[in-house]
Image (cartoon, rainbow, N blue to C red; front, side):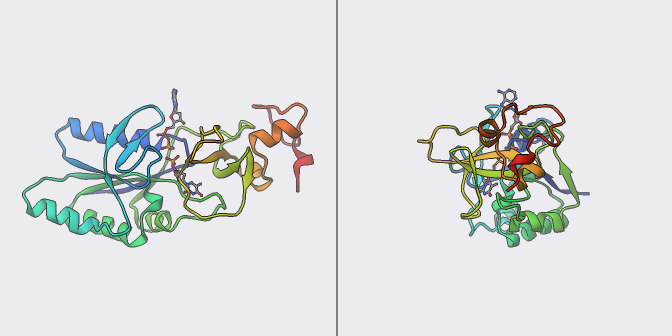
Length: 226
Ligand SMILES: Nc1ncnc2c1ncn2[C@@H]1O[C@H](COP(=O)(O)OP(=O)(O)O)[C@@H](O)[C@H]1O
Ligand SMILES: Cc1cn([C@H]2C[C@H](O)[C@@H](COP(=O)(O)O)O2)c(=O)[nH]c1=O
């Protein structure tokens, strides 16, 4: 029975790495897959992981019809056993419906990877549809950490180290970007408490005399309430 799985977690938790690992594992057993992505930081039509792995992929623009693409390949005599779909938060909900149809009617596994929520803690429309339709939602096991040492569950967009609260939902960017000349937006993963209080690593460093990176820290930032 084919499966529709949504692998999710905050930025920088290893989703793209797992996507490429799954492709490698399935492909090495003789299965044929197709890789898709949307607006990867490394550029168009590429899946890149921070561990250095990179693979060419099909870029998912708004017009891409997964169903038509797969049916076209199959009727052209090609074989497809699975799809790897990275940055799936950027897919249109209708495209996620197409993926579910591919699983059910063509018996092709679909493995989708993406973040759930944006910098304002709102769910991306594509991720919402994935939550609604996937057979299984798998939260990644490599837990990204907030600067305080708690599990990072939220994605903050930053400017000069401070959290930004207004802006477009989609702005491609990276958690490692510290270069102000870097064209991509900067992001930082935080626990809910520090996302709510807008306490990024830089703010904590500037405000707290002794930020405790892995202590309990329960009241250390009480002065940082707005
Ligand atoms: N130099 C490194 N050495 C070991 N692991 C690394 C290194 N750089 C990144 N990682 C791992 O890769 C993860 C990010 O992987 P990536 O696939 O790019 O994440 P995502 O797609 O979820 O944003 C980090 O959480 C960390 O575990
Ligand atoms: C929170 C948030 C993120 N994005 C972008 C930033 C990155 O380009 C991707 C996430 O990639 P990753 O492989 O999971 O690190 O999403 C965005 O456009 N808007 C946001 O609010």
